[in-house]
Amino acid sequence: MGRDKSADRGNASQRFMRATGKLRAIFGPASRTALGHDMTEENRRLLAQRQAETRQWETITRSDGSTYVVPKNPEDRSLR
Image (cartoon, rainbow, N blue to C red; front, side):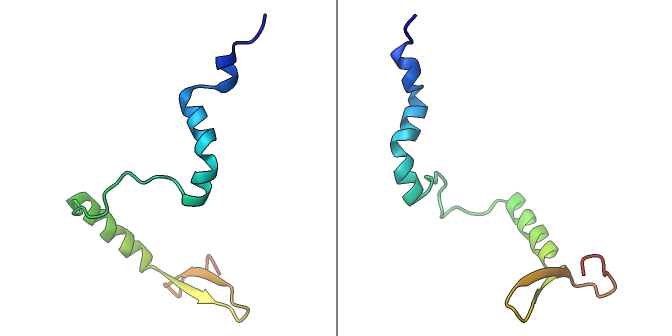
């Protein structure tokens, strides 16, 4: 009839998330990857692909300071 006290508290991961919630809000989530690793060949290919995609666009700044992105191809008026 009475509820189990452990059900009120949740499992261990839920208790941990509640306990560290304010710290995570200040410091952000923990990163588990090393920053000083070499790029793999797959990552190099992905980076080159993303850079090529980025070069297809330009950023236009309006007089009010707002910006928007348009294709560099002047014949393409689909987004203007």
